[in-house]
Length: 243
Image (cartoon, rainbow, N blue to C red; front, side, top):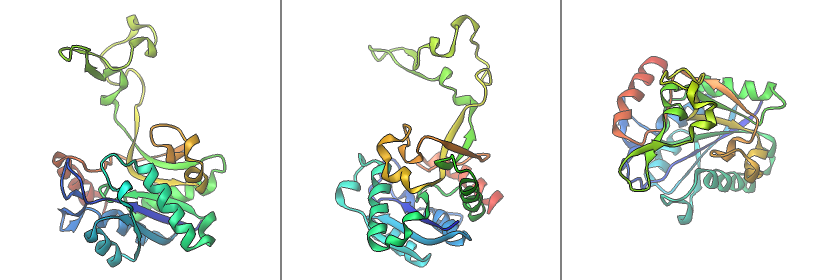
């Protein structure tokens, strides 16, 4: 059940500047996912892909090998899937013997992960030959697609984001947030994938194509990648409860 980990983060965030290195419960945000990878009993090699010297230093303190992130993958328009693939190819160039290892994918701004969670995901994927990946999910029924709205063409009024007919007969729909069953979101805390998910990325399921197609859920009360300051107290609560 050998695995490697790739943690990614860049320095140029505009939504929440400096989020990856901001102090949360006395540690940089990026410390938490990298520490979880370091403490996993299955992860044998840990890597950090970044253009931020501060993250390089944090990674070095947690035994993470630095992978240089090129300028074209260090912009706000760069996709995480492209960074993961680029990083994975760098790793195979450095150490081809890792080609059969499972891959743990982490984000520097997603601290709601532990070594126990990583180990459980690896065990689940190892024991499920039909699964492409195991990812953490949370039940967020309040964000059912039925409730989603967008602005109309005049940018004045709200209209359904998805046509109601997608959910069945509109006459039978209601406002109960549980009426569509459990609404599960990949919360970005953790993805553990088989190598083919990265090497055959184009055939993966949208929107996070690195997860492949047969995605096995690992349930988590909640988790998130931090992009807004209001998420910090929620993350602090998670750290206090689970770490």
